[in-house]
Image 1 (cartoon, rainbow, N blue to C red):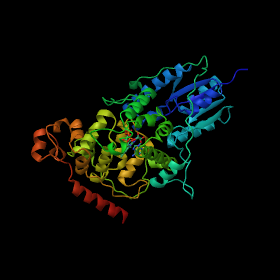
Image 2 (image 1 turned 180 degrees about the vertical axis):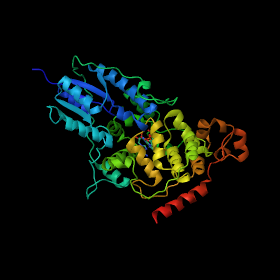
Image 3 (image 1 turned 180 degrees about the horizontal axis):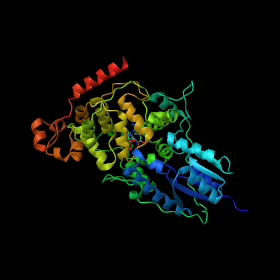
Image 4 (image 1 turned 120 degrees about the vertical axis):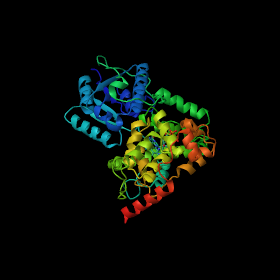
Amino acid sequence: MTTRPSLVVFTRDLRVRDHPALSTAAASGPVVALFVFDPVALRGTHASPNRVGFLLDALEDLDSSLRRLGGELVVRHGDWVAEVTAVATAVGASGIHVSDDVSGYARGRLSRLADALAALPVELVRHPGVTVVDPGAVSPAGGGTFKVFTAYHRRWLAHPWRPVVATPTELSAVPDVATGELPTLDALVAGTPSPQRRVGGETAGTDQLRSWLAGGGLADYRDGQDDLAGDRTSHLAAHLHFGTLSPLEVASRLRDRPAADPFLRQLAWRDFFHQVLAARPDASRADYRDRGDQWVHDEDGFEAWRTGQTGYPMVDAGMRQLLAEGEMHNRARMVVASFLTKDLGIDWRLGAAHFMRWLVDGDVAVNQLNWQWVAGTGTDANPHRIFNPTTQGRRFDPAGEYLRRYLPELSPLASPDIHEPTIDQRRDLRYPRPIVDHHDAVAAHKARRASSTD
Ligand code: FAD
C-alpha cells in the first residue's frame, strides 16, 4: 500500500527553512507543494507591481529550493479554494497543510476550504509560521486581545516561543502532477514597478539578514534606526511579509545577542498588529477608535503628496523614495502619514491605499494599523500625534543627505537651507512653495477634531 501524499499550500510563507507546515507534511510521506494565484488576491491595492514582482522572485526561488530537496512547486490559477480542493482530490491527498494567517481574506478562504473539505477524506491542518508568537497565544488576564503595546510586549517577551523546525532533508515528490508555469508580471498586474525594487526570495532574504548582521546592524540598531541618511535598519520587512524569512527564526537567532532588544521590540510591534487585526478584521478599513473625523476632500493636496511635490522637503523625499524603491524609511513614513492626515486633513485610508500600491513590504495588518496609529484612530490613546516635517528633517537628517538623495533639484543647497528653502531658492531650483502652512494646518486639524468629538 502506498502512503497518500500531503498537500502543502504556500501562501506568504515562501521558504523551506522553519516551515512547520512543510516539515510536518514531509515527515509523513510524499509532498505536493502548491501555490495558487487567486485573482481576488491580486485586485485593488493588492495589484502592486512591486509586491507581485517580489512574489514571483520568491516563488522561483522556492521552486529551486524544493527541487534541490527532490520536490517541485505546482502552480495553479483561479479561485483559491476550488484550486486547492481540485489538486488535493487529483493527487489523493490525505491532508492539506497551510500556515495560518490573520486577515479577513485569509481567514475567509481557510474557512471556505474547511467547508469544501467537510465531505472529503482530507484533513485540513493549520500551522504557525507567519508571526513570532501566534495571534491569540497571549491574552490579557481578563481575556480578549491586547490593545496596549507595552502590556503586550511584556507578555510577548515572557511567552515561550516554539522551537525552530528543521528543514526537510529530502522530499519525496508525487509523479504525474502537472506543475504549471510561473506567470510573467505583466500577465498578473498592470503598471510599472519601482526602478529600484528589492529582489524577493528566501535566498535574497537570508543574504540580506547575513550582510546586515555582518555590518553590525543589530548592535547599531538602537542608535541607527532613525538615521535617515545612513539607512541602517535591517530591510527585512518585505521578507517577513512574504515569509521568505521566518519571523520566529530571525527572532530566535538574535534573541540572546547583545543589544537585540530594540530590534526584537519592532518584531513584537509586528506581532502586536497581527493580533489586533485578528481580533478586529474590520480595522483594515474602519477606524479602530472612531473619532468622528470629518476628512477633507482635497484632490490637489493628495496629488502633491502622492508625487512628492508638497514643498516640504522631508515629506517629498519620503514620497519619492517610495516611488523609486517601493520602500520608505520608518521615520519618513511617520512624517508623511502625519502630513497627509493632520496637515492636509485627508482620510488615512487614502494614504494607506497609496502605500499598499507601492510598498514592497505592504502588509494589511502592519500598514493599516500604523496609519491608524499616526492618524490617531488606532489602538493608541493619543489622537494628536503630529510630526513637524521641517524639525523632523533637521533632527533626523541634519546634513540634508537623505533630502539630497531623493530631491535632486535641491542638491545645490547645503544644510540648514535645504530643510526650509527660501522663496527665491525654490523659484531658482524649481521646487514648489509649501502647499499649506504647517502651523495653520495643525490648528485647523485640532479645531476639526475638537468639533467632531464635542
Ligand atoms: P527595521 O527597523 O529593521 O525593523 C525590523 C522589522 O520590524 C521590520 O522589518 C518590520 O517587520 C518590523 N517593524 C518595524 N517597525 C514596525 C512598526 N512600526 N510596526 C510594525 N512592525 C514594525 N511595515 C511593514 O512591514 N509593512 C507595512 O506595510 C508598513 N506600513 C507602514 C505604514 C506607516 C504609516 C508607518 C509609520 C510604518 C509602516 N511600517 C510597515 C512599519 C515600518 O516603517 C517598516 O516595517 C520598516 O520601515 C521596514 O524597514 P526595516 O525592515 O528596515 O525595519
